[in-house]
Image (tube, rainbow, N blue to C red; front, side, top):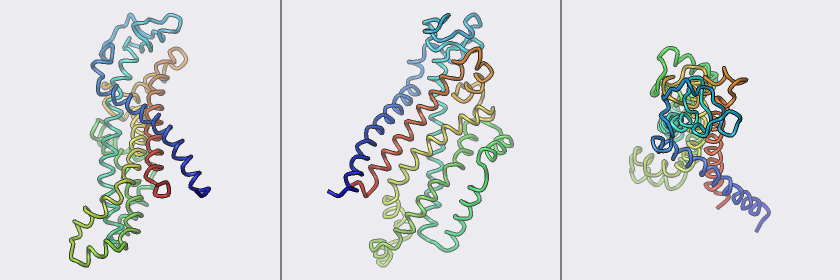
Length: 286
């Protein structure tokens, strides 16, 4: 066994452990979102001004009925974090899927057809990368308004480029393969070649990019909500909790700290899973 093979095997073994940790974090987030009505001790909109700004239960003045404390109007932080997982995960998954659909389609067409199609898609990619996305997203949401679907549509603009670049580069290298040339020679139609031969070949890379794009979408959605232009502020989400908690950092640190931890752990989990997938699907590691 060569030195490179040994290094790859050790790297895959370490990546498997971290990938398992990332998968555990994602499973916890998904279960919290799916079972929010059962797991959350309170409804996220329940207000009790008599219990406002309670610290976590282990801190002085805390209450065991509110383990992570309460916010400025007495809403339970733990319940809002559990319910907020629904919005954050839904936005991340929907934006990643939409970006994968658009970017993979354009990337396949650009890499397979080449010519003006490739030049047009490459130009769109360059234009997209030339704009600071956060400023672009702020402009679009200011014009069209916030909400779930507008945020998903805007975030998909940030993710499709990643899919298009990866799929295009792979399609460029695959279109000259013998089996594709043979399929074209016997008269197999272009739509069937794209669907039956090219798409399965690039699908592993699409899955890897999707995991990283979902993490990026979750983080960006939280940033937009923090700026007050994300989803409906009345709907509990981790970003809106951060936005509210920044005004109480010195007097009620828990209002922003625990939603921030939830965002960090979820994004970390998605990135660890993405790293593990990239190692497992790397042909050099097989």
